[in-house]
Length: 64
Image 1 (cartoon, rainbow, N blue to C red):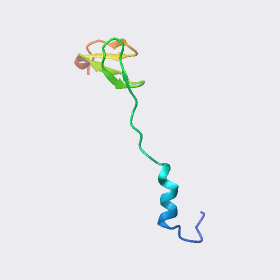
Image 2 (image 1 turned 135 degrees about the vertical axis):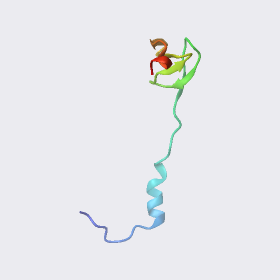
Image 3 (image 1 turned 90 degrees about the horizontal axis):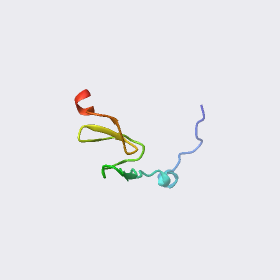
Image 4 (image 1 turned 120 degrees about the vertical axis):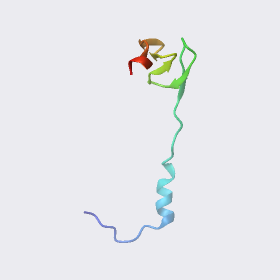
C-alpha cells in the first residue's frame, strides 16, 4: 500500500475536492399526461404506469 511522505494540508485537500458537487436531476414533462418526471424513469398517473408517453402497466397501484 502507498503511504504519503507528508501530510496533505486541508487547503490542498479542499482545492482538489472543489469539483465534487451535487447536481439537480433533470426534469421532463410527459407529452400525453403533462406530468413532470425524471428522465428515463417510469412514473405513476392515476394508478397507471407511464414510460415515454405510453401506458406500460394499467392499474399498477392495485397490482403492487
